[in-house]
Image 1 (cartoon, rainbow, N blue to C red):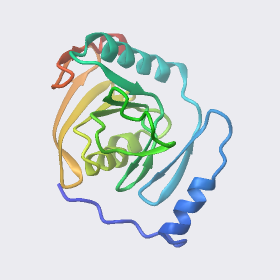
Image 2: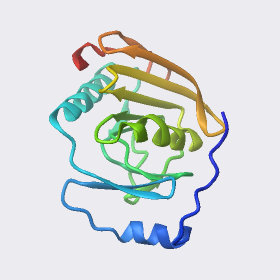
Image 3: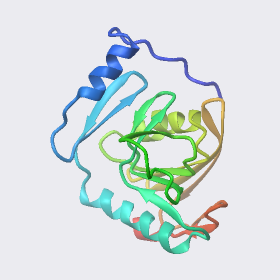
Length: 185
């Protein structure tokens, strides 16, 4: 896997970042800066939120250690500023952070596909790998699959384990539990 080169924007990187940080979005919408482009997405639908809740409950109940699970925490990664659906980190990790925090120390990010699944499948995955986040869990609703990406190296994950909805998937340490995907069907 090869790291993606930085994308040059006609405004310049600093101007683009400033425009992004000053952007006002309607209530419930979120804005992300991904590989030099600004994306604004609407609030998630009920199926998306149900999948988020399923993952949240399992992390809180089944993981061998305690973690914080942040919904919609702004992360600064080498390829932009992302707001993952779920960010799993050590307890208190974001206690004194601003709206946008460095991704260092994040243990796992999960995304549930919605209006633009290719961003979750590709660009956000690569951004999280470039930040060194050990695990990226993708719930791909249109494909009916859950895929665990691990071992980030050179801007992407070198290992992936896809399973169809309904099949369990083992999460590595420090989580060390089997994720039940049956309710995602």
